[in-house]
Image 1 (cartoon, rainbow, N blue to C red):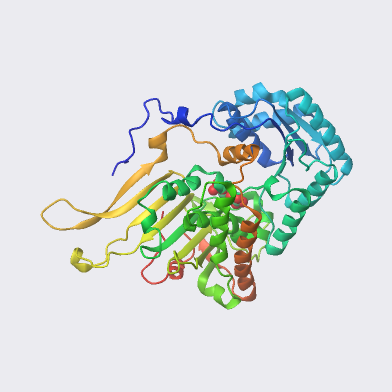
Image 2 (spheres, rainbow, N blue to C red; image 1 turned 120 degrees about the vertical axis):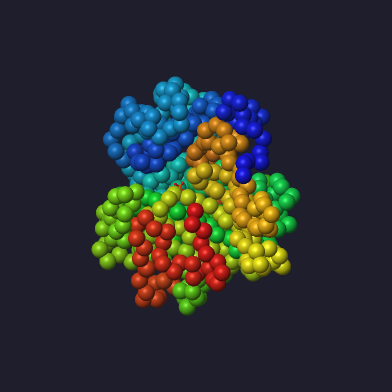
Length: 513
Ligand code: BG6
C-alpha cells in the first residue's frame, strides 16, 4: 500500500523546511575537543559541525580548539579535518569548512599535565577576542575513557568548569560511560566533582536519530496509538539492532565490552524507555528523563539463576557474507582465540508497572547479521474471536517503527482478498520519511551538538538513567559469569543462533527484517 501522507514536495526538499528553520539559535561558544586527532573528530564531530554551519545553525561567534598529545600544527589539524568533512560530511559541507577553517586551532598538550590547561585557558581567551565566543565553552571528551578523570580534574583545577558572569561551561561525555555500575558511579562522581548535572551531556547517539525522536511524536502527538499502548492490546515488543559489520579493527575494545555493554546497555535501553514511558508533563529535559528513568526502575535486576532463561548470547563463526568468506569473531584482530565475548545477545525484560505488567520486551542486537537494520515491532494481540480463515489465527497486527535504514513507520493488518471467497491476507500501510519529507537528513551528532550548545539535555542520558541501565546489565553479566556455559555460535551472515525464538515463548518468533 502507498504512503498515507501528503504528496512529496515538488523540489525534493522538506515541505516544512522553512517553517522549521531558525527556531533555535545557539549562543556563541568555543568547542574544545579532547582527543581531537582521533577518528570520532574526523568522521563525526567536525563533519556534523559543518552540517550545522551549512544549515545556518552555528552561532556567529564560534571556534573549535582541538586538544591532543600528537605534535600537530594548526595547518595539519585543518588539513585532516577538511579531509574528514570531504569524506564523511553531507554534500556541500566542505565549502562551509573552507569558509570557517581559520576558526579551527590545535592545542598540543598531555591530558595529565596541569600546565596544558592553563595554556588552554589563555588560548580560549584569545579565541574569545578573535571570534566572539564570549567565554562560553563546551568541552567534548572524545578520548579513551581512561583519560576522562585526568581531564575532568584538570579542567576543574584550572577553573574552566565554572560558570561565571553568565558564561557557560558544559561537558559532553562520549560512551562508553563506565563498564559496569561501579565504574559508572565512580565516573559520575568525578564528573560531578567538576560540573553540575545541568552542565553535563552524556552522549547516546541513538537519541539524536530523527526516528528515535519520532517515537515521542508518534506516541504523544497522536490520539490513536495511546489507548492501545498497554498490556491489554500489546502482546509483546521486539527491539532489534542488527549490524552487518563485524568488529573489524575494534577487537581489543570489543573483547572488553561485548554486545551487551556496547549496544544493549545504552542504545537499546534508551529506545526501550521511549517506547515504554508514560507521557511526560512537558517536553522539558527533566520531565522526559524523569519518565524514562521510572521505566528503568521498574525493571528488576536478575538473580543469577534467572539469567539463563531470560537471555541468550552467542558469537559469530566463520561464514559467507555478501558472497565472500567472512572471518569468525575469534579470528578477528585483537580477539583471544578462546574468547567468550558475545557478539549477539537477546534479553527478555519485564517493565513491571500497570501499563506493561504482562507485556514482555525483547531486545536483541548482533554483529555480522545479514543486514544493518534497527527497528521496533509492537506486536498486538489477536482479536478475541476469530471469524476468518476457519478460525485459524492470522498474522498478528504489527506496528513497525523502522529506525534505520529506510526510515519510516508501517502498520501490518489483515485485508480481504478481492474475489468471491472470504479470504484474509496481510497488507501493509507504510509511511516513509524519504518520500514524505524528502531532503537529506542530518546526522545524529548534528542534533546532539546543537542541543549541547543550546543547553538542552533532553536527548542526553542523565546520571540516574545510566546507572539504572548498568544495574540491569550488571545482573545479566553476573549471571553469565556464574554459569559455566559458553556463548552459542552463529555463522557470520545469519540471523543469530538456532533456537533464538525459544526466548520469546510459545507462538512467538523474531521478525526477520
Ligand atoms: C556504537 C557502537 O555505539 O554504535 C558500535 O560502539 C556500533 O559498535 C554503532 O557499530 C552503531 O551505530 P549506528 O548509528 O550505525 O547504528
